[in-house]
Image (cartoon, rainbow, N blue to C red):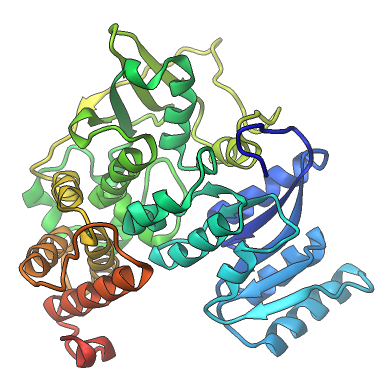
Length: 414
């Protein structure tokens, strides 16, 4: 694909993480716009029954799963095909930990939507970029932990954000040149604990952390929204995507989640992108970039009275953003350490082993610990091996701190 000359021609889409929230909504978008899109390939984790149903309904040419065997997936597809009355459907089947990466490089594709959750999305991101596909990136972790490794792999215009905040910024940036940008302003809903002081957060439960007031998301992302780690990662993502210094990226709490982010220009003008909270809009724009897809989502109803409010972020109660900016300034593998430690701490929280505030406290301790290790936070542009090694060390350290000393990774930690 020639990224300098975008086309409205029909696009064949590979969806990574097809059984998750982003993936299922992407399939809705594609089904509503068959003249614009078709499914080339699907990849998921271990939900083979749903994956098989998606494959049969879209007639994807290739289907991959990280979990299960080829025989398991073949049986699931055969069952789904029988249930749907479909005959003569025999896709290419891939299984194993590299299935998503192999499908990210699928030759008969134009766009790869990476909707995988977590840093395991890094290898598929690099594979899609190396294959020359347009990459619609919902897997923010791969850009954050890969950093310069991902940026150097991407051609100009090849990387398109799908996060609602970064999609909003990309749209607003059409209003001026790079030298006219003063600040980026990311909005945050505030999550379920907006307005609570740090001492009040000690006793919150995993169920409360998953009760997001606006978005329906997976366990890790929803918990990250509650701790503000998700917004911290988005700040770093904005820095990497748009090349704006971290000290010129702000966060403001906007509970209504209608204004998805803003760009403030040097003349004092601020351009905001607004729409009711619906991920189908940034997904459609991501896979169709730079062209809009009619009817992707319901617009704001300007005939009804409404109020939008904006509040400053309480950094004492939610220090994750400040911590992420400091880690990002260290460079190298620091954000890989930050993200890996957080993923382990989130699991420990949901297992009832640590408290809510301990999640970010664990991340801070692991980042600081590995900052003093010669191999802990490698400087410069890391390789994929460097990133994976840093993650390994961070996970081992986080598990130890969370009381998971018997986890197998700790037997290998140096």
